[in-house]
Length: 43
Image (cartoon, rainbow, N blue to C red):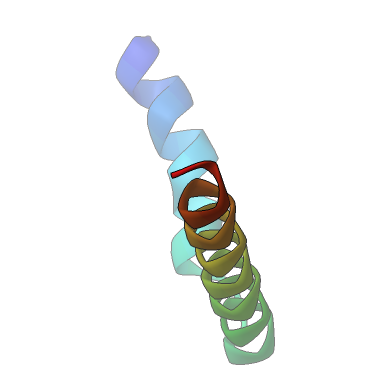
């Protein structure tokens, strides 16, 4: 049951159109950069 839920959640991620995938990649990169900037400011 648990595995079925996980597959239902993750399957759409593999069938995402290229445009959406690129957008999510950009979002992840910007988030990563923001986190790095924040950690640098804290340190």
